[in-house]
Image 1 (tube, one colour):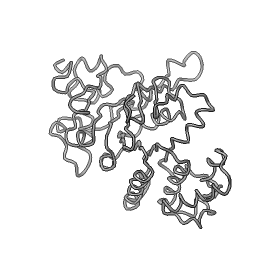
Image 2 (tube, one colour):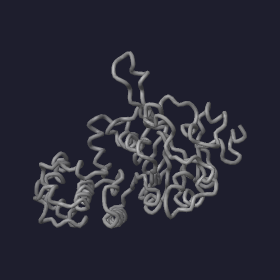
Image 3 (cartoon, rainbow, N blue to C red):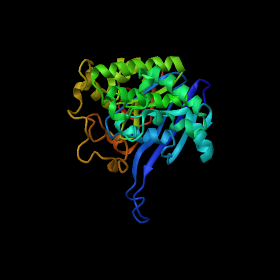
Image 4 (tube, rainbow, N blue to C red):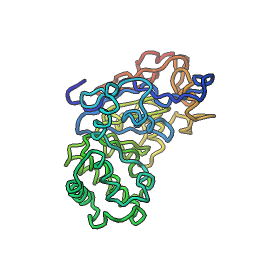
Length: 333
C-alpha cells in the first residue's frame, strides 16, 4: 500500500443473500460490486451517485459495521479483515461516521452529554476527563457547553448535526465518513456545516470520505471524485479531471441534470432519464451481465452487454469504466 494512502479498498463486494437455504443464492442482491479506490491521508474523497446506487452499503462494509462479502479494506496499513472482534472494537475509534439524519442518529431519550460520552465510557475514560473533552468539542463545533444537559428536540436541525459531528470528534478519529451530512438542512445552514467540516479537517488532520448525490457540493469539498452507478465505480479521478473532462455516459448525464454546470457536448446524445428502465432496484443489479449502464446508454454495443468494462486509466489519475471511450478496448464493437 502506498505510504501516503490512508485508506485502500480492493475489490470490495457486498452481497445480501435471500432467506432460507433453497433460495439463498437465487435471491442474492449485489449492492457493492468489486469496488476499488484509495484515499490519501488528510485528503477528501468524494463519492457521488444516485440514491440506491450502493453508497451506504459500501460505507457500512468499509467500516465493518456490516462486513464485506469479499475484497479487502486497509486502513493506515492495517487489513481490517485480519482483526479479531476485540481488536476491531479498539481500532474502530479511529473511524467514525456522520450520518445524514441527525434525528435518527441521536437518541431522543438521552441528553447531549450522555450521547457524546457514550463512546468515551466504553473506552474507559475517567468522568473528569470525559467532561473536559465534551466541553472542548462542543465549543469547537459551535454549541454552548451549558446546553449539554438538554435533549435533542431542544435543538434545531443544524445544531443537531453539529452535535453529531461533535460526537464523532469526541473519539479522536483519524478518518471520518460523511454520509450526505447536509442533505436534510437548509442551504444557508449547509454552508455553515461545510465550512465547519473544512475547518476541523485542517485542525485535526482528518481524512474524509464525503458521500453525496450533489455533484456541485462534492466538487467543492473534495480532492478526488468517484462516480458510482448500481454498485460499481464508473469513473474516478481528481476533482479537476472529473469536472473539466467528464467521460462516462452516466457522469455526463449527471452533469446535464445540474443547473450551473455546462455538460460536455456528448451529453446531448444521452437518454433523457437518469433512471434505468423497468426495475431499478438492487435485486436486478445482481442479475445483470456486462455493463450496468447498458440498458440506458445510447452508445452500447455488443461488448457492453456481455463483458464488464474495467476501470481504464485515461490520463493522470483519471480512469473510466466504458468500452466506448475513444481508443479503449472494445470501442468499435
